[in-house]
Amino acid sequence: MSMLERVNSLKETECIVDVLLKELAVNECKRCGKCVFGYEGLTQLEMILGDITEKKGRSDDLALMQDLCEVMKEQSLCEAGEDIADAVLAAIEKYRGVFEEHIGKKGCRAGVCKKFMTYHILADKCIGCGDCLDACEDDAILGKKKFVHVIVQDECVQCGRCKEACDEDAIVLAGAVKPRCPRKPVPCKAR
Ligand code: SF4
Ligand code: SF4
Image (cartoon, rainbow, N blue to C red; front, side, top):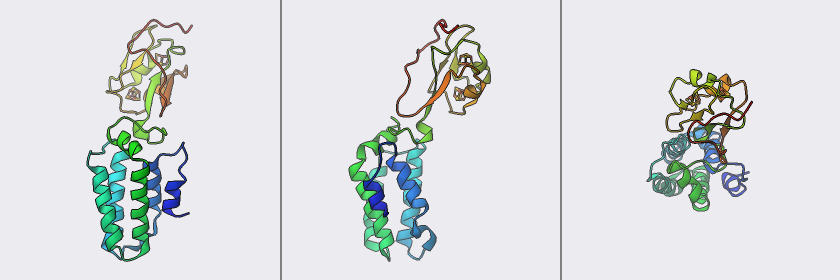
């Protein structure tokens, strides 16, 4: 399947940014390197897309990729570079909103990009033991004994230590759909 066909057959459970990155990683241009515009263009696209999945996207990333693709189409020595450019341009046109959500740090709607996954404590399972709070080295958890604990998303670095520490399976990792959780510690109802 060509890269363009892959873009056009994207499933709801897939993220276009992630799919493009995976396609570029195995693209023949990466192994060839005979022309600057194919090889360097691919490398630049990988850097920009990688930053977007890592929550480091910038407002001008889409325009930058479009400019890069136009040059790749014109200057690559063979069709491989052109095919990459066509696929990326089609992806931007078709999934602009998805790119913008990543760049604006709003999230990954498919729940694929790990940096956009978040940890949450389920109120109906938390017994307020405090083990997660002790495990968190970033002071990202609020709570006290017998109160439902709460993760402060701005402080959380997604290390996962709290989830490992919780024997009640009260901590979940969420992608596109986030569970409803209290914003501050409230008395436990579990047990
Ligand atoms: S989330 Fe788990 S580890 Fe943390 S207080 Fe609740 S039950 Fe204990
Ligand atoms: S994932 Fe890591 S940083 Fe985030 S609340 Fe849990 S222990 Fe703290």
